[in-house]
Image (cartoon, rainbow, N blue to C red; front, top):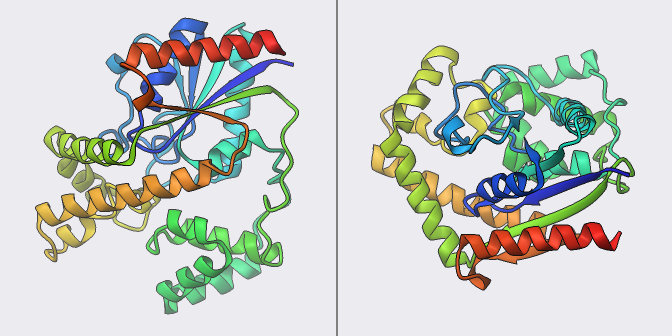
Length: 308
């Protein structure tokens, strides 16, 4: 069975850089598992690695979906499996890296999305309810699937309705509720984290850097081209600008809200990932520097390969 390395962790933990270093050491390529880095035009706010930051390592599933296009977990599963198999066919080591739990689970577990075809009658009913009261429909999603409700903004009509459609068709059960591990790959999961104070400090620094790089202009241009009723404006770093654009918040208040929401998101990510018992966690505080951390991770991966 061929190996898939998975590197996960909260936002601003350093997983992207770690994935690049592991790929350099193991002749690998990186496959993104980030639900917002998939979108074109969303560079700064998603912290998508620039070509010069990729250090010559091939990256996949970055910036290939239009901001106003619908792209589901099922689409991601299909595309990611295809890319992973293609990397393996060339004798390279695929490294799945990201922080979107649903995307990661679509690869880690044997989840079948083929039974969730659109139900037009139900969709029409949900669209009518959305027109009457979007907030009420989002509250309904929060009851049925709290994790999805955190991910999907009330303004994101397409994704909100599609998620409710799937849940109602399944009788309220999530299609991945009874999951079993996949048997396609031999998987090694690596988790990277930091002490909370360090993680929160790095989140604040990252947001400040995003503003310095031109985040406001990036978000404004997306808003001008597509409006607010798109998937992009369910993302942290984008949705917070809507009150600012409406003259209801200052830029400083917007920045503080992004920092607050990112900290909360990182906390939810850690809660999600801690449920995965197969993850070998590495904390930056246990190492003298980045090189020591990278060396320990690579040694663990190689040892795991020899132990199989």
